[in-house]
Amino acid sequence: MMRILALLGLAAWGMLPAPLLARADLRMETQMFVERVHTDINGRARRTLASATRAAPGDQILFVVNWRNEGRAPVQGVALTKAVPRGAMLTAPDPSMQVSVDGGQRWGRLDELWLPTPLGGVRRAVAADITHIRWTGPARLSPGETARLSYRATMR
Image (cartoon, rainbow, N blue to C red):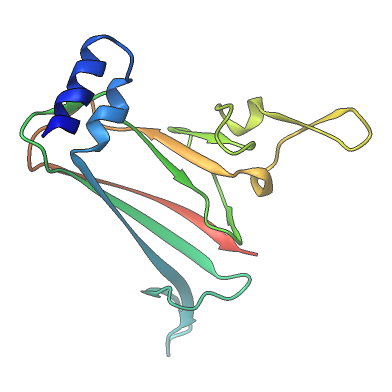
């Protein structure tokens, strides 16, 4: 109880960002699926999803992130941040998400980010450089309300 009061006090003084306080009331769960393409007896491609307990290089992975407001008050202005799993490369970053190529220090669209080169120059960042992704959550998430988003990656 004292910890919650301390967090509320810090938030009131502006020392703790609202998204950090809101995360205590959010439960986030990520599911991973491997997307497989099979040809049916008529020669048509069929896509199926299977649990991604074992993903091999080249597999297309679908990540589904579900979150729920388990608090007693609405949550607003939340930014959800996830590290890109080791060995995964985003296939097509969604324009609604921001990405980081430096462990979450700087954020932006992929075409806006640059990385240093070993010889002292810079180069444009590519999908393989993405280390973290971030979305702005819904404008308001009422108590008990849930939301979902998804993104795709390829296993390296």
